[in-house]
Length: 278
Image (tube, rainbow, N blue to C red; front, side):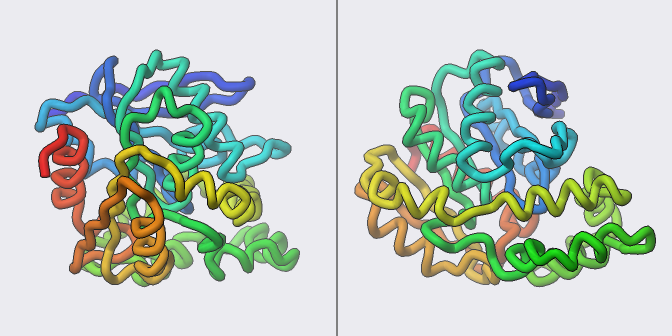
């Protein structure tokens, strides 16, 4: 059975939560919005069983990490925070895996810290101007302060709808899964933290660096759910076509939340790519 160590590192006075299977990890996993490192729970064990240690982070403002009120939570800022967190854990070099906005963080890590990124795996990732998607973008409207600030607002309902739209295997959407995704954002302070995270997303964090990203020579695997309703497959195809050393794998019976829909398939693809098996 995989032994998982949970802990925190401090970056700029903020606590960044992580879960890892060993002290010398070769794979890092980065989640998106509105998830947390919990997204990877069913991916950790099969990767570790293949002989690779892995670390999964909660981005700043998400999961069990700090939720500051006056700190930039955009993709570019998150990349700097994760780079510092990896330095704290004495990460040397390896495979960086990112889902959704975590994929944007991974792209910027590869640009700005190339010495620590050996390979990229982008899972239903944001790319170009694909974010924030409309459901997240609308949260920038002032009315949502009042809506999410109401004592009786049930965030679980919204998260359930998002999972139902974003997953192909809808039987996997249990009350326990929804509750764990809602837990870090529970109560009025938690929902306000969720708003801050959503409102911090700016497409220009990637758009301004499009040419650099497309010219990355790093080996890159893009894994996409064929039924992704939030990050259309066309974005993945466009990025795969543009990058000189990229390949695209499409998982047919999966949507946007591929780590929930097909964790074993995703773990196998990550492991095979990381060890150079085609």
